[in-house]
Length: 221
Image 1 (cartoon, rainbow, N blue to C red):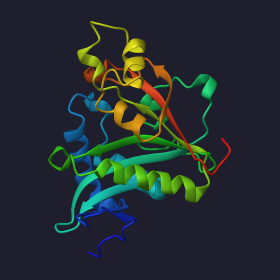
Image 2 (cartoon, rainbow, N blue to C red):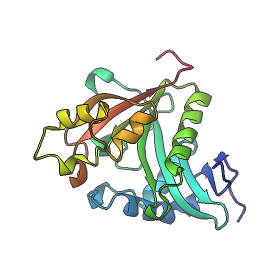
Image 3 (cartoon, rainbow, N blue to C red):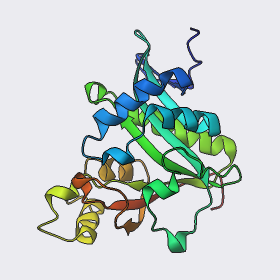
Image 4 (spheres, helix red, strand yellow):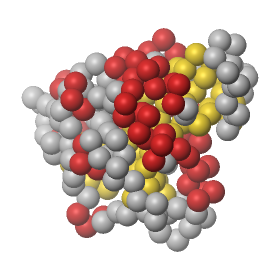
């Protein structure tokens, strides 16, 4: 099998971002399961979902390979969409076509982040940074307005008895609390637009999503 062409590589050369390919689907499913153990089973991406995503919008599907072994160790899933910021609340599964990406709009002027995951064995190597860099490069290349996503405030589940989610998110934004997902995205230049109740089923974030936005500095959005 010919190795996929790298989109970019890590500074140490150990890892490479490539466009996801159908043979990777079972490995991507395993990354999803390991990355989101608290996510409701019916909301997890399976191999059949990844194959559909690759067929529908191949440019928006990225994987990270360990160069020495060829092992698939991280991945991200995106689709193009039109965004109504006045009515941003939505259900995750509805936005992503039940994980099949049938909601992908080839004329959409925003990239919607459906998923990003790093296998726990490979965390701490900057792999999510590589994937976000690949996403932002794609946005610039396609001339899109930016990137939106429903971030999972995965630390909120432990605080839900002490404060409402609005207060939790405000404290994370101010740097008073650190959230394992939202804090990282804020450091990457994303801004909080609003809070989405019942976004998905995951106890770690009490089913909430946080609608976040990264604007392409090269396009008037």
